[in-house]
Image (cartoon, rainbow, N blue to C red):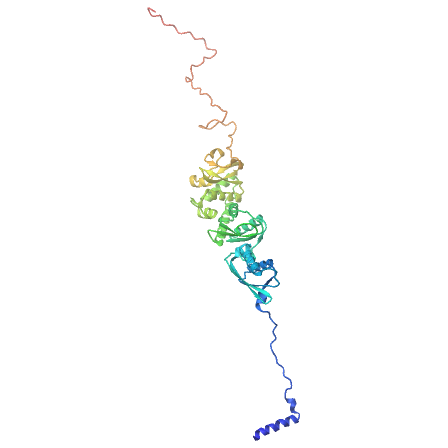
Length: 412
């Protein structure tokens, strides 16, 4: 009790003696400052006030790949729920982006005080190209250019947003481009084209290319073919005669392999690097060799013995001739130029190619033994005595006496 009274007296003394300056008179509270943040759903929510803007908002969700989206509708004139169903169907089943990307879509609409809150749930299908990377195409020429670029790179797909109604035959176009570029394109792709929607405009077209080897392997084949063709120009560089060049090119081929006639998915590579050939691939390779070495050459597409067949027409020292390189490789082992008259078993549009007439024999030269005379010529008469009747007497010979008549027989 005495201690308590002592403490009280000490406190009173301090107050009276001016020691109050030792005690704090103000207090400061420090707290971390943070900016006010809106609710997350406010940042993600799109807005709409009409059916058109509702469609645009749903399409934007699809284009951005949003699986769970929110749309808020204020001051809406019309039936929100009915328009929502129509807008969702139009985007998912009629708009090219929706048809291409959406598997199915669900929606829910709730009234919250003064606005509607719409929740859109989207399940996307597997697709090859990101939606924001699909190029918009406005002409067949542009579509063909993009397809050629894809084939040059051995791409496995190409997706295009066509803003016009196209009727391109993509498979035919791909085949034509492959045939025109045998040195650069090693394999003809198996092409599948799909439309989203199937027809009309606008629509998305997805092309899928299937190759017999990977892009890396095909590029390695392309390099091997290019090296082999380039080496041919070195092989014939010291020959001036076209015929000599052609014979050396033939040797260049035959010394590489014993060839087998068979189909291949990589025709030019298989011929030059594996010894597998067809008439078409041999004619294409011969065309490439002639182009590389400066020989004028045309590839002929026609028929032989009733089956599709290809060969070449080449200008050799000023004279056009037919060269069936595959036939010569497989049958004779020697290059044999042929003229039009020797092509009885071949069929082709002769008017589309240079004529290959046999050369005229030199004037004043008699045909060789056993050779038929040229048109308009006659063989000299055979002057062997005694085979064409009695000889005609010479003009100065004396007249001959008639032979004595035998005496008449008795009783004649």
